[in-house]
Length: 305
Image (tube, rainbow, N blue to C red; front, side, top):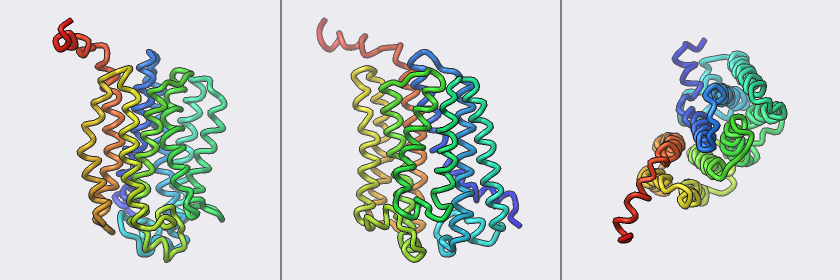
């Protein structure tokens, strides 16, 4: 029977920055529109948190019973290692999905966006279907598409819309960027697992692309995710703050392109998640600082007017 520390490790809490980032970004975009609602932001975070932990347990269960995790490099797999029974891990996943559903129901009731119930249900089905069921889409190379949709578009724009009932350019840029960062994290993870995934018959996008092309895809996703912020600069020069992430992104890209394998790729996974979180925080800071408008004050000194 797994102990508490093993259950926590099995929850893969290092992935939680990806759960928090879109909530911060979506709430910042709502604040920009003058309609930030903290109680709804908290509920959105609870939905994201329990879905993230739930999908981690669901993947642990599904990969474990399929034998995919028998020789996996990385954090503890509860089922694959034999630390916990498949039934217990499946129950933990379903419990997390249930808690996510309760938080989502409260969020929908507050926002009166009842059609979000369908989106929430699809998110749970997507979380389970990644590695679960007879035809898991994660085994067919479609995991990246669903990660982009749910970790980027749905989480960020959903947070924004449940607070404001509208969307904005900032919300869209943040959603696209966070979707790309999330895909990059998944790509690095799948590059690390290419050898074992091939043996297990798991045809992730990294397996389909091949090692070199998958590493290049990681670099493109990280670079494009950051570069999208250029679209926001005309409206608010403070968004330039996000470009302090060039250094960390360059480090992770060089690590991946440099041919790191196995455990040596784990820092790139952590880096991608932290970059997504830092991006959202810097985005929020840029929106908060915009009323200061020091750019308008210093511009005359350089122009002579």
